[in-house]
Amino acid sequence: MVMKIAYIAPKSMAKHTVAGDFHFVIPQNATDWYKDSRNFKMLDNGAYEGKAIRMQELLDIARALKVDEVVIPDVIGNAKKTLENIRSLRKAIAQEFKVAAVPQGQTVTEFLECFKVVSCMDDIDTICFPKWLSLTRPAVVHHLRQSKQLSYKFEYHLMGLDNPAELFLYRGQDIRSVDTSMPFTYAYHYRTIELFEPVNLTRVPMRQQFDRKQLELLERNFKVLNDVVRTL
Image (cartoon, rainbow, N blue to C red):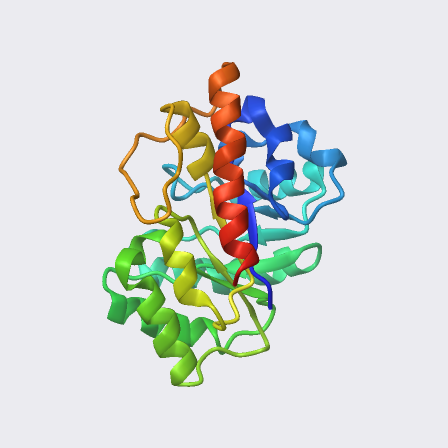
């Protein structure tokens, strides 16, 4: 399986997301530009950006933009409430869209317990690995694969990326896709992504416009990450 990558763009720069393999849309950057795209579209719930929106609003956006997959609203760090949402909302979403779920927990152990429960559910197409797993995420994926808990019943997606070198650790791990705003964030700060030298930068504002130099850096940053995923 060749991993696919999607880029999270400021609302005003949605057209640049064609540099990726598909579109990853969050409510905060949703724009009608995505409606006419024929690429696969995954709609997140916005939890990582501050607060997941109400289910009806999420479905309204999904319909308006003609998305393919919707991420069930999760509650970061709270496995119990996240599972409640998955149980109560997954069938409604499945009537119109592919369904993605994000297991949660306050610890890696709680995440794994939540993952196990989600893996036994029907009407789930994709299971996502949250960004907060951080440096442990590759080890978690490897553990699940070695213990035969990854199933061909599901596809798997990485929520967010801060270090491109992390992707090398998923070679042969059956991860379908990853999303990231890195190219935009680095270009916003006039930086080029370096494979083994990630830096902590404030995220690019959702209504930002780029100057000529930033656009040049953006293209370079796309190439860095696209070259990585093509080797997986």
